[in-house]
Image 1 (spheres, rainbow, N blue to C red):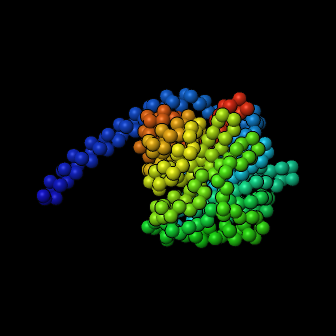
Image 2: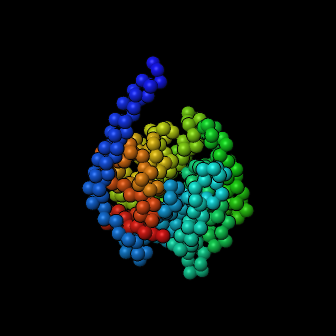
Length: 332
């Protein structure tokens, strides 16, 4: 077969495929707009009119920084993209100042000191733990303890071995030790109370069966429950890294899903969404970067509206005493 004929065949395959993807994407957007009517997202006023049991999804572009709040207690799950990514050629804007400022704004007492019951690094990708250095070393932020499962290089795949994860992790542990903050590497698997919330960590131990699947396979998920409502913060848990299958049956019905891996390929698979049956989803990204297949699965399989932290400038999910979840935005 000559090259001209091969190019023609490729064109006949690729062009219809791209057209089909475009049509499916437009259909999913139309359905998404209809589903979004279920949740009227209003601007956050910071007056606690919806109660003080809340999950704050910060706007750190396509990175994770999530603050859990209940009855005046606070915990930080991941810290967002830092300012000194070792992958300098592909580094994104850092959000250290934005995250630190938000913590000081929301968590500070009358003495100006912000207190976090704990911090959790879900895994060692820089867009999840990069800003911890700035948080831990800030003298106006007090941290009771830090949950870090570790940084197991057996998970690394391909280029990950050159991306400096271990060095960033070691710096964070050094920062914690310098401030005498206990580091807990044996994460509790059992549920524990946190104000009015019950929290439970998932994927808490290293799994040799997933070695080589990438650092995302080390991701720790967090289940948050109050009354009849439940959320799952899926870190970078995906089908492709193998963790979705491991946790989905134990999770059961979830009302709010923090979409795994920022809505990129491999996250929010059909089987995962069928198991969790979320009512609403939050993606730590901008809508335009969410993969078409993820959008399709959410709206056409799960019939679930989803909201992006970037497009909403941050989102708070308030868990009311009346067993409602109320979403507010523009939190920065």
